[in-house]
Length: 459
Image 1 (cartoon, one colour):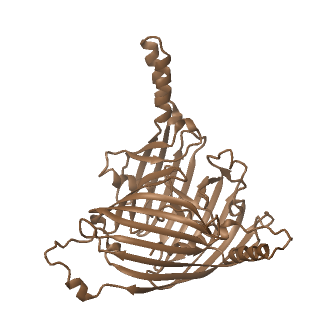
Image 2: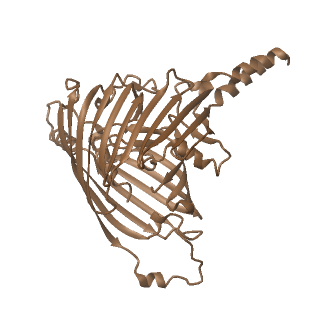
Image 3: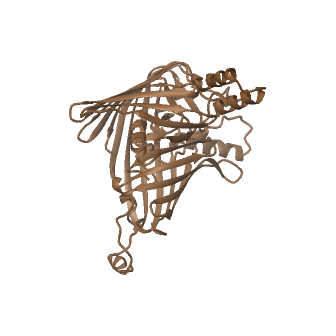
């Protein structure tokens, strides 16, 4: 399925998404807004752990693209794991980042203006190399508390920004639930338009039942607190005056959601069809265990959510108490078992998400009033209430390499009834040793972002 479980998260919860904006490599989705396209939900493994594994197959330097607040620094950066000591119940890691564009530009300008090569020219050139705005550093440490609980502490110093980005995370898996407590100063959020927001202080307490694989009930409840005015990162002239999402404004919010998921197979190859395959062709294990079965299936999820603001109730554009319904429907078709060298995987996922039934009803009501010629001025609902169509296409290139296109459309917008909101191209290299793991290199032309990351048990 094309990440159908995201429906309960996008109802009003935030969730970590892959993002190269920070050394941590993740940003939260804005609560109450649809997910921006990111190829898949970010891996549960931390960026520092990803870099530790990636350096086994890369030359120790991982590239990334992300807009910078200082355009002279450029979008391209190089990330490397500098240190990673560990013991049986503790590990730490130091990550460094380097943005070369400004360095090369300044050195080129200095040399072009020099009349002759001398020691002073060398000294002036050296000063550009030690410019602190070119370098960022991040420190992570995780401590095991007992047999299952763990505590993660991180601190980042970004070269082109003042201050230190800090985070604390406590994770305690229960028998049928996950308990997570997170605090960040500041916390990074990503809205459905691809804009980044920094919230000065953020605290989250979350209890979630384990999501069912095929059919079953899933619920989640928790508390979210934010403090301080959100700041728009890397704002352009057109977007510098945009208001921050209401859910990011200061306040304490209690929230809960429950959903039910169902799945039905429309087609699966019969045992006879499997036996009729060419006996002379070599048999390999699939490159990814989650992509080993050709099939066609439909699945759906429906649920409801409730949110109550305990403080910050007087904030404009935010209801003190709100209840809503949400849902998703998905169709999946896969041909091939992803075990041969060529032509053994073609997969298409199509998913429609309705993150807010009330906002959708409001949009339909306004559209009917406009079509009836009403002269009464009505305020259109936010585009966040529109249904989203997500299309994912995957095609094996050769062996473990898969080309993937992930797109998202807003239904009911644009001249043709649908407007593309985001598009991501990626190359995935599946790792048989991880059973369902892969190295993903993705790029978003709209957000001008891209990164190389490791994902496990996702597609």
